[in-house]
Image (cartoon, rainbow, N blue to C red; front, side, top):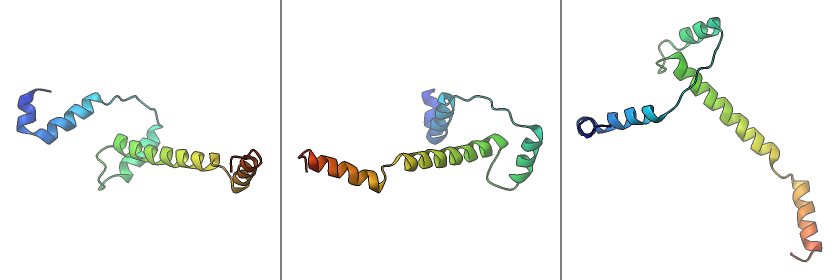
Length: 92
């Protein structure tokens, strides 16, 4: 990024630099869904269908990751069994 651009608009230059480094790929959705989303986001803060879809997917993925972590958590019964085993082995 040229230093001149940074001096004129430091925040904008960093945003442009960040966008330049971000890599994207194409995901296909049905045209009818695209049109529905386009109508849905009119008058909102979303400036494009891609921006909205990215937001929604981030939310869904974060929720799924959280659920996966919860399901992998040790249950109370498993905790008791672990503590009992550690006790029998002399660690507690």
